[in-house]
Amino acid sequence: MSFAVIQTGGKQYKVSASEILKIERLENPEGKTIEFKNVLFLNDDKSTEIGNPNIKGAKVEGTILKNTKNKTILVFKKRRRKNSRKKYGHRQPVSLIRITKIFSKDGKVIAEAHPQEKLTKETVKANQARKKQILEAKKAKEEDSKKIKKSLKKIETKSKKIDTSSEKKEAKKKPLTSEKK
Image 1 (cartoon, rainbow, N blue to C red):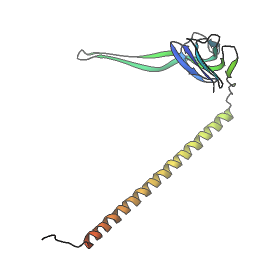
Image 2 (cartoon, helix red, strand yellow; image 1 turned 90 degrees about the vertical axis):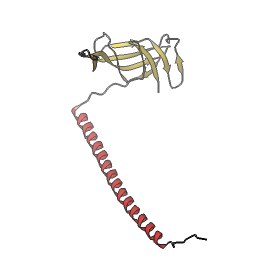
Image 3 (spheres, rainbow, N blue to C red; image 1 turned 90 degrees about the horizontal axis):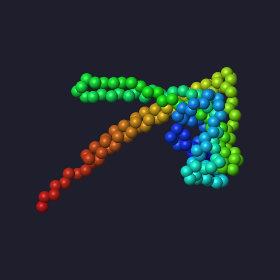
Image 4 (spheres, helix red, strand yellow; image 1 turned 135 degrees about the vertical axis):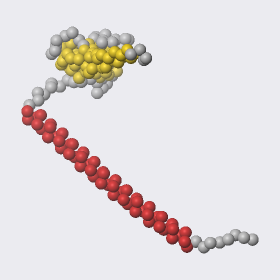
């Protein structure tokens, strides 16, 4: 499986074709194709290239799916014994990107993403039906495992009772001896 390590927004990401990334916000509109030329590492099925610090001529192409904001991060500051509190939130702007192609330093395509299928109502319904079947199967397995555990506990308690009663019988059979000389 071929992959590349790229640098964008001050961070490094390991990417492969048709992967969706959440990176720092890019100022390009949605649907536009962008190129990442800061490629630090390339791995093909046959060879590996390491940059010093970048691989010249290598690039990674991707399309912007969405420009949005990340989850809210709550920031709470408190100074004890001063009755001073401050609470606010922050939503980091991010871009969702789908990696389409990875090019080597020669300009050859190492990996290419397959075109995305458009979801129809029928495929959505089929996926939901599959999910329901999987959930029902998991519930059935859990119920079976619970029943098995209960039966094992019953068997263990019965065997403990039998063991204690047999020990009592053996204790009665042992003759009492006194060791006085």
